[in-house]
Length: 83
Image (cartoon, rainbow, N blue to C red):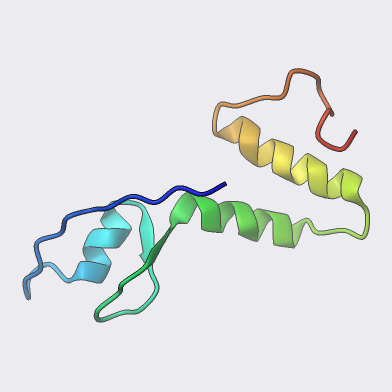
């Protein structure tokens, strides 16, 4: 999955770029002059998957399906991802 989005920001001392990116739902990859930002939703997904990481794929698939369902998407059959 690859999705890039250009966002135009007005930079001034009263509204630092890092704060603006967080407001837009992105995490800046550096505090002062970020050239890249990552979606906070994606970071949450990776964090949940890491916390629920298990040595088997069934638990991993259940964690990923939970994230997908929270974002209003579902698979055609209940546990089709780990099948």
